[in-house]
Amino acid sequence: MIYGGQAAIAGRIPAAAAALRSVTMRHRLALGLAVVVCLAIGLVAQSPAPADQPSTATACLKATRDFQTARMKAAGSPLTAETYAVIQQDKVEFAKACIAKLSVDTLPAPELTALVELYVEAAQMDLADGAVTRALAAAGPDPAVRAKTLSTALRITMRQPKSAARNQKAELLVAQVEALPDSLVGERVAAHGSLNSYYRADDIDEGIIRHSNRIIELNRKLTPADRVPALAGTLIAAYENLAEALAGNAQHVEALAVLRRAAADLEGMSGVAERVASTIERYELVGKPGAAIEAPRWLNTDSKATRVEMPGAVTWVQFTAHWCGPCRQSYPAVARMMQRFGSQGFGIVMVTQLYGYFESQRNLSPEAELTAIKEYFPKNGIVFPMAVSDNIPAVMENGKPVRKINANDANYKVGGIPQIQILDKKGRIRLIIVGWDHANEERYAAFIAKLLKE
Image 1 (cartoon, rainbow, N blue to C red):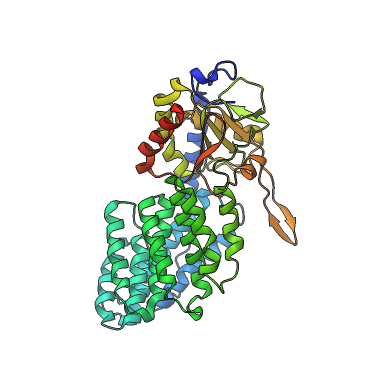
Image 2: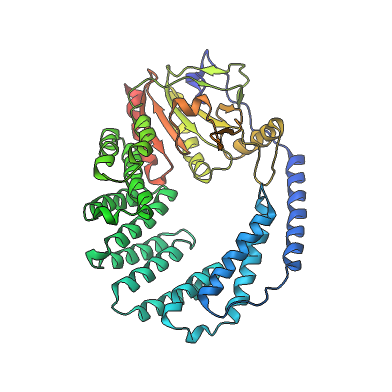
């Protein structure tokens, strides 16, 4: 098999190639970015000042969002990061101009929630916090009004920079929603769902498990009429998120049990069984042989092999991509795993594909994208052999574009990245991890150490 260990690679694949260095490429990218920034500044400066803006916060909020939607539609596709940044800045200026025409200190209570959202659109988060305080005070004892205001407060809180303090503030808001009457159980589910989705995006298992379990508990209080389409995604996600967190903690049996009871728990809600089916298939792989990794091209190795079998070493197989933030956060830990266990028969295989773009560059040829990622991955510490599959274009099926997946993604039931499989010496999948939680690194290291002793 292909992997990054020293002792384990004897007779298989030579040591990973050194990271490519291209000063010329970096200079070209830096110069191109400088030109784009200058153009962006020029576009912002030339944007016409908004006219005839509304005089209420609610109407102003709608006008701001309509303005952004129209600008994005006019920009066409693909929408580059630079163009999006220009549109966002124009939207901010539009919102600020609209706010300047409002008498914000004397707005009636029903307008305060819209004012909060408007401050967020204007990137004035400190003013948004102040408006939230005013809105909660104005809400009084009316549970429905408080629920709406708390929901807005939670939404803007989670748009602030990530930090433990931000998460604690959000937890306190959810606790206030929990104190609302049972007649507002749907609002309680939505509040937990909002925080659950952020913890899932941040891959914080503790928060995922806590809020997913609470949503599942609250589901028992929902009547069939309460299970409205707006809550469907939140309810189903609770089962999927809980299962993924449990499986990542080596509790794949419990994860499967959660998924298999989802359809019964959510009786009357359509699409539940279909949605969790692929996640069930993924965790049913635990204990089974891992499929060979195959790709037409490989990085960080001079081997000509295109297909690599799994048995032979304890192996870390990670699906990743150059655009994936959580993947990048995992790389230092992956490198530490190799430093710690590489001499004991531990190996690493990274798996990715081409996407047709890299950072702000669009419509790249396979050769150009490959050149970019040959620099990107080693620069981030990934010097382990990496399978690179082709970019498979979407095809039309029943009038809709459908993106096909490559053989590696299909074999390992990849539903999100990073997705990591830890295989034993016999090539059997023993642990599947979706996402990256820094708190779990030592537990994964202990798991690897255990497999190396088997």
